[in-house]
Length: 178
Image (cartoon, rainbow, N blue to C red; front, side):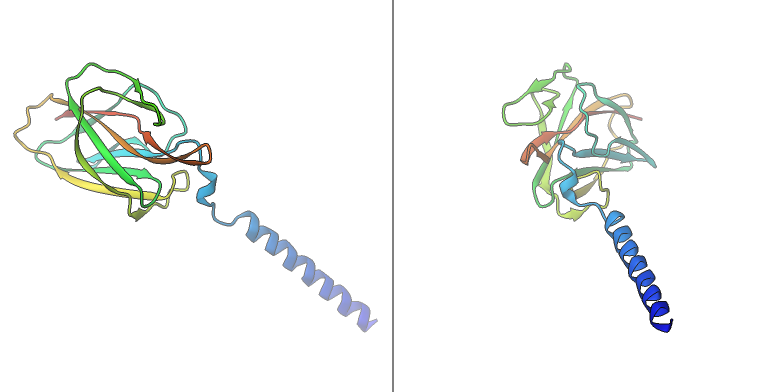
């Protein structure tokens, strides 16, 4: 009888241990390999407000509205594949276009741009919907910029797409100086 009781107790512990292991495996952290549909992100933070996208799986050739507070710093955050290059394009008062470029995922919003910021995504990103790389640039917005001026910007970074890494355009932001 004692042997049967010990066997049952051991079996119950074994079943519990297997169940616990299965739960740990099921709720374990997500891996970057779950990202792969061209997700990258571009956000603008200004005067306590945040504008932009955090690694959506969709892309639209319409810009997102944003506000920039003149005389205060703004944070530009780009998300993409870790340790890969990124760039931020900027333009003022150009007609809206949606230019598909061979070898690039998504579309460029303007034909003539300035690239004021570029670098490498060296910071880890904790948002699991994103590829894992992050970089934030703090930029002072000159107080002399006229109120109502519209600046359109778009980031370019690498994303995972079709089993590889490709340069990918983000959605564009059109920021109005306030």
